[in-house]
Image 1 (cartoon, rainbow, N blue to C red):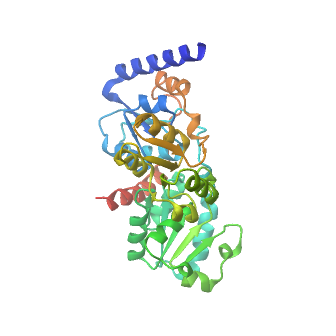
Image 2: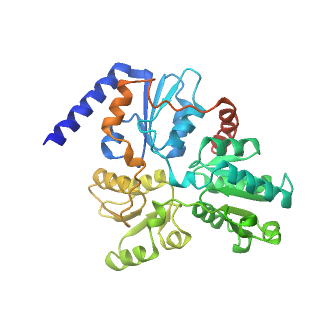
Length: 350
């Protein structure tokens, strides 16, 4: 009862502050946030959709991003000079983003371009990366992508240059390359712990796609045996998974796509359908609540603890100190180069 009373009071105070700030305030919530946070947001979406929203909303003064840190950084990069971007929990990071630090990437880039030539490789960086990596991509002619437009970014990159260097998610990269029909011998993995990423110069010259050895701990929890069990227990079920899953899981699913794709897939399914979802558990649970006419199940329980760091208490604290605490700032030089790469991403969908 005490917890329920505190929750109701927190929601009431947040709603009062939203009313007070009115159009000056914009609260963005990622699909993986807990339900009470999503319900308080002005916009919900995946990282691509929220990036578009951050770029389009020019009138507000304060942007509060309920997601992980790299997403708030992207909103800050795309923001207007009069806008302040805040995140309720500064410690809400991303394991995948941490797998590709800038010095290691710069070393890899130097080694690659010594073999291929400076103009032969197109860097593509997943949204799940910090601002310095986005800046690296921008100054070397590349673009950012999300799970919504990764295949389109790969196609653009391979039309522009001989090779694509994709980081940090090997599985999204592999699945995007598979979607374009690239043969296995033209795809190599770059392990930053090994000389030349564990490849020979001949491997690198032959490759069209070079994948950084990073991954999402949330989506790699889904295994082939989970799919087999669902097929046995619920043969009528449709399985939809996120493209950060392994290619083996993706190959066994009925559909694959970004979080926004998954939301739309469930929405368009017929009443009475059984849908099993391989993505973060907060989204799965919320979809089940929003579609009581359908049977929505998780492929396997998988929580993102960093997304879960955002809660009513720290969102309220942020709004009570609007423009003052947990302000996300990106150095101007990095911001300029990263914005170039983000603008290329947005242009891919126009």
